[in-house]
Structures are given as structure tokens and as C-alpha cells.
Image 1: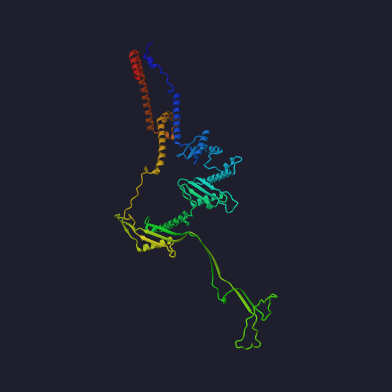
Image 2 (image 1 turned 45 degrees about the vertical axis):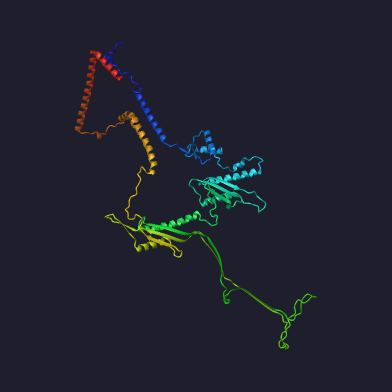
Length: 562
């Protein structure tokens, strides 16, 4: 086949463009690029988001954990364990549904069994096994109730239930022991221990509070707070806390009152309080001595007098000796006969009784003094020397306080602490220089913000968002913006609004210059078109005159492109 001529090479249309070179291909490529950018942005956003997992169960036994994970696998619910394996995490949308489904299966069962143990008893079980199951159920229920406390991680309850007896002397009271496993860093105060003791004692019939023993995981006895080996009362933590609060309050009052006089950091105070925690109940009865008879108050008076008859016949039982002994024989010393008219010697006896009851003064007094009273206060106050700084030289000098100032501070401290001489309180105010009082103050060294541990979480969060912004910026400026530039240019051309009439007004000179520029632009375009046509004509002429040159030129172009 003959080689193509120069005219065919020049005038022939270009080869058929590819799909990507067409407008549809360009639109397709633009849409694919936009979709890719959006997909990458969505992937980065999902990657930056933490998975929304919530706690399903925590603090479970190994047996319950295995049963729960097996049930979750059967229900096709994804799960994972927390750090340390103390909790099972599931997606937030499955938490409540999974809990209900697992509860229908009786999970988690827990380490203790309750009264559900009594539901599966067989017919004909012995009384011993029934009693054992009842005791286990009661222990499990008590342990579950105690574990519901926030400070208790787990608990075990042991009950000793004696057999009932028909003899009163042989009856024994039940006893209980509670072992507590507390949460990390948690302790129980006296009120909480007492609540646990009363909870157990109220759940077991005829169980006294004194027979309940509570022990923690470290072996500390918690229930016998007021009963040491010696039998003496100990100072419980509440009382120690009360003493500390009183001392701190006195110190705060003293320092807040003296600080305005001597300056911040120039006064130190310490207080010791002797608190009387004895609870005294007094009942007294007092009797006054009897008043004089003339001023006395007579309650009642009884007087009785009896005279017996003389020479009377003896009386007694007939046929027996007389019941009355014979009278004593009397004879006058001078041997004279008795005077006429004198009473007989054997006259009857005379008896006189008198009883008088007087009112007696009586005073009954009952006194109850509350515990926690202050028996004695001891306060020590240390005041720094006065610090004087020379404004010109910056030299620091110290000066002791005067006696009047020390006396003034002493009086103020007495008023602040509630000084009582009758109570035996003591106060000592001392003026002495503090260590380093004559040294110039130096600002405290501060950590750099990038070394401060408090800023590390914020820095990590900002770094994550900064990385996300850099990736998005790279995708926009390197991929999305070059693809959108033609579309945005076309959109600007379509939405270009012609200037308003007021804004388009120009002067005559500007109009002339614009017309000249337009004419020059048209002439330049005409010259370019004329030059293109002349070059094209010269190429056609050269192709007609010497086709070999054109063929060699085309070969050179093809070889260079290969």
C-alpha cells in the first residue's frame, strides 16, 4: 500500500479519542474521585471513633464468665473483655437485650446460692439434708444482701444454728460469722459495720447482736470495736475524727485572726484538745437535819396511857396455879405501921406511850452530762519576725515584734480559742524568726507545658484531630481540588452577574483606552490566525514539493514518541 501523502497526514482528522478523553469520561472520573474521597473521609472518621461498647456484667466468677460467653456466642452477640478481664463488654445496642436473655437462663448465678436451692428438693429428702439446704440458702441470701453494699466486693456468711431443746438450760443461741472482701482502697466505718451486724442478727431467729462477728479480707476484726482483751473502752474512729476536727477548727480560727496582722505565711498554730467522752448519769438524794421542835412540821402524833387495877383477884385457868406471880414483900424501915389512907402496896402498873412523826426534807436530783465536752485546751502559736524590704537597695531585714504587739496577739488568740482559766487551758505565743525569712523570694519553678502530665491526654486528642485534618487537607488539595477546578470555573462563568449600571460607568478616557485595547487584542488574534494559515500553506507547499522530507519528519516524531 502506498505511503500516505503530506496532505493526508495534515488534513486527516485525529484518531478517535478514548473514553476518558470524552466529556462523559471526564464526568465519570470526576464522580469516581469524589466518591473515593468521601469513602476515605468516612473510613477515617470511623477509624477515629472509639467503638461504643458498654459493660454487660462485672465482678463475676470464672464459672459464670464461661457460661455468659457461651450464651453470647450462641446469640451471635460480639463481646470483648476489659483490661484485667474483670468485665464483659458488648455493643451498647445489645446491652439490655442480652441482660434479659441471660437472666431468663439464670445467669449470672453468682458464687452464692439462695432460696432457689429449696425449689429443686426431691421428694423424701431427709430432715438433715433439708436443714442443711435451708442453712445454705439463708447464708447465700445474706451474702447477696451484704454484697449489694458499694464498699463490699464479695462476702461469705457462716451460720451456726444449734438444735432446739425442750430444756431451758440446754438451749443455745445461734452464732454468725461474716467474711468481707472490700473494694480496692475502701474501708467500712463503725456505722456500716453495725448495719451489717444488725442485718444478719435480724435475719436469723433468736440471734443476738453480740453473737455476730465481722472480719475483713486482711483478718481485721470489725465487729468488736469496744471490747478489747483488757475490757476497757477504746477510742473509736468517730471520736478521733471529732478530736481532730476540734483541733483543726481552733487552729483555723487562730490563724485566720492573726494572719491579717503579721501577713500570709508568718504564723503557725497547733492545738491539743482533751475531750471527755465519758457519759455520766447522776442520781442523788439529800436529807437535811431535823429542824428544831418549835419549827418542825408534825406529820402525825399518837399518845396512849394505861393504868392497871391493884389487889385484884388472880385470873387464870381454873384448877391451875395463878398466872400472876406474888407481889414482893415490903416492910417499913422504921417498923411503923402504914399511914392511914395510904394506897395499898400492891397497886396496879401504869403505862404511857407517845409517838410523833415529823416531816423529813428530801431532794432527789438526776443529772445527765453529754459526752464530748472539752476538759482542757493547749494552744501554741509561733509568729515570725517582721520582714522589712528596702525599696532602693532591695535588702531584706527582720525585726522582732514589740511586747505590746505580742500581748495583743496573745489576747486575740485567747478570744479565738475560747480560753478558760477555770478549765486549766494553757496558751503560749512565741515570736521567733522563721528559716529563710531574710532571703529574697524566688518564684517557684514551673514545668514546661509539654512536660506537664496533666496536658498529655489533651495533646493526644489534639494530635489525633490534627492528623485527621492533615489527611483531609492532602486529599482535598491533591485530588479533589484539581478535579473540581474545571467544574468550578464553568460554574463561575454561568453564575457571573454583569456589573450594575452604576458600577459600569466609566470616563471617556477609560472608554477610549478600553476600545484601543480591544482593537489591539483583535489585531493580535488576527495576526496569530494569519501566521497559522501561512505556516499551514508553507507546510502544504513543502509536502507537495518534497514528500520525503515530510515522511522523514513524521518518522522522527513517531520514533521520539516510542
